[in-house]
Image (cartoon, rainbow, N blue to C red; front, side, top):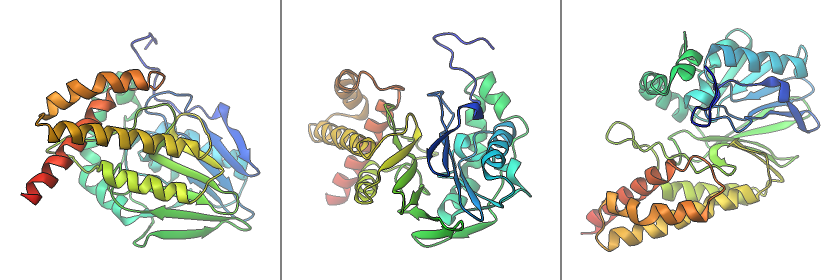
Length: 306
């Protein structure tokens, strides 16, 4: 399928651009291609960790080969930041090749929504459908129920951290406390509007105010390097920019609700100004989803107080 200004390139991971962020910490960049995540590979003396695996078996295979290329014959551990297809639906390529682990909330969300997300994503066009050809939903070998799980890769500590509902039910970040490197998944993007998967009544497991709280917690980790779910690697300023956007959207949406606007009215009133203010950010279609999410939150809170 040929690319055009209106047709995004296929959602294919390209390992040829792999770059070393720090000694033994590698990133396969997303190249700002929609539905391609930033992929991390962290190499210790004894094991290596893969963070996110792309969408579908072929992308998973590419990530696996890239991990083998930098990790050698070290055993592999693989994790995913959340259940969404471009981050997690390539896991089948790692069966028998790596031990998989992530938090239980993510597994429960995969079980509840995985099949429906395959159907939804296939409707996004032939390139996405092709990436999902033959996809199988693979559950992890291990889950954890607490807020954190620390992995020892041999001379290198890695923390899998979970703080509950925000972008999804099971958002997990990966933090290297000694190097202060943070992989955020879709809790943070770089010059891309935050993805609000607010699709009521079937799926409304996203909460903007909780998201803001989680971003404040991420800032408290004081990372030196932030690898967002999508977009270029940066510093802690990426987290601050994301938090400020959510806070602005919440303030303006709550104001519209308090003035009596319905959800459509709030979108019409707020979206143009947000587009203008963040004119260099991509995927502005997500603005309206965020407004509708905050609108529902404010209406529910007002009803509860009545």
